[in-house]
Length: 627
Ligand SMILES: NC(=O)C1=CN([C@@H]2O[C@H](COP(=O)(O)OP(=O)(O)OC[C@H]3O[C@@H](n4cnc5c(N)ncnc54)[C@H](O)[C@@H]3O)[C@@H](O)[C@H]2O)C=CC1
Ligand SMILES: O=C(O)C(=O)COP(=O)(O)O
Image (cartoon, rainbow, N blue to C red):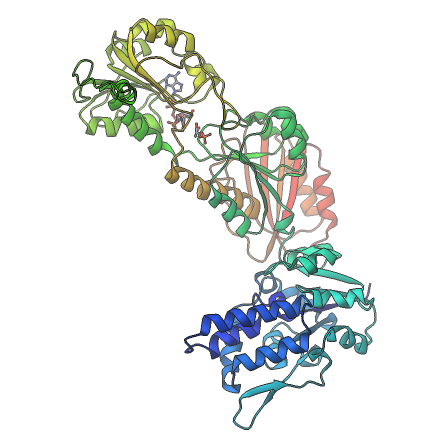
């Protein structure tokens, strides 16, 4: 179809309004600069939204600008650095469709022409105003006879061009939309990459958050296979706002929900979602994964991942990432603090004084120095606790089902019972494997020393709660700290546990990893993994998927093929690539027992039918093309 593309300039091709930039330059040394610039911006917006006559807006602004011909080179230099991001990255479109592209702008040719000529748009297809100068070169006005200096001048300008074919207008303002309203243009795309103007967006045939989306809708040459704004990310459970910022900044469409969703609601919500972000509460079950037809990645913004059916996700081609170290230190610091609080009976003394009782006593108050700390689970958290506790003078014992190197002077115990027998404080840091259910029950509690303490910052199901309650009530344990519970609520509010009201028992609402530092770190770590996977296919550090670190593809298309790992499938894929005479520049493969992940980089020119053929390969789970 013969089409013509009519672009606005300010805030569409560039990120800014050029006259605002000019004001910054010319008013540099004026004390009332901020005030004048604010006024100019106000007038600009009134003009763009059609709230005052455009000629009036132009006149007022030029007067306030106080500009000179010699300011223009600096303006052009600055505008060059302020081309819209997705315009810069899609130069190819401007090269291949040069003959169909026009600029109609109420800005000025003096700065538009030099900028757009670099995008193959010649002077004769730029329709804009021109400045008037006095003899000294001061800008004193504009050519008022130009159609574009008049209210709704774009309508008359486009009409007078008498262009053939379908006319598509791309702009951020209502003054661009009017060409469509007047029936001269056929489509109006509200361009919101730099500014979202409600009045324009409300009337648009399409809202296009960047040029990628516009090119995608029109099936035009583009730099990105799939516009990122079409990738929907759902972040649950109050993940740190920086995660939202990181992902939105990269162009994705992100929705935040502060709590976790129950299965039925998640099944509904996940249907159009490509990336799901959760913390420890949200259960990603097979039913959820079956409903998640578009899901590519789950990001666990925490350490634990058993809330996700990892095997099922893998079989569905859904890659899972977590943040294995971001909150380690936070948990360790809380454990250490609690050891001290428990051994000094700080909480009973504190609640007494809150009730008006002064009870200065050394009874049941001991230093941690020289006491035996038993760590169950000598992983990242357990080891870090080992180092810090030892630095504070504790004697560290540990028990792990795997062979683990003892750090510092820590002593390895051959069995859980040995560890429980020897410890003054036992701190649990096993992983969230379901086999650890009731790891500490009545028997184990009685294997602990009388008068010792228990800390559980791992998972609620690891400790038998009624047995713990009994051990505290009978005085067998002198105290405990519990951060995690077999059943935890989905959002903040009411909560009950059988442990409430017991003496020398610290209860916290699963906040071991909830520090600003940890959450901030997670908000960088997990989004980076997600973006790496979506943007390049890399699965480094995925917890349920063959790990591949991929080089950046340069000037190539990348085929990402996830398949069931059955004999002969790679041969089949390569037969197809050979049959279509593909020029392969790189191929990477990683497999595990049931899933294979093969990435093929290709020269850009190829027969697009090959994509259909690859998708049709038996045992294919997911396939996508990336460029
Ligand atoms: N309270 C909170 O907010 C947080 C809780 N966590 C919990 O802490 C757990 C531990 O975290 P990391 O140290 O990073 O995990 P990790 O995987 O590095 O270490 C866990 C260790 O426990 C060992 N282990 C597992 N089962 C065992 C058993 N039955 N007996 C003895 N050792 C056993 C494993 O071999 C491993 O060495 C997480 O899985 C998570 O459940 C993690 C972060 C925050
Ligand atoms: O990291 C973990 O596994 C935790 O238990 C912390 O979970 P959260 O992010 O607080 O829901």
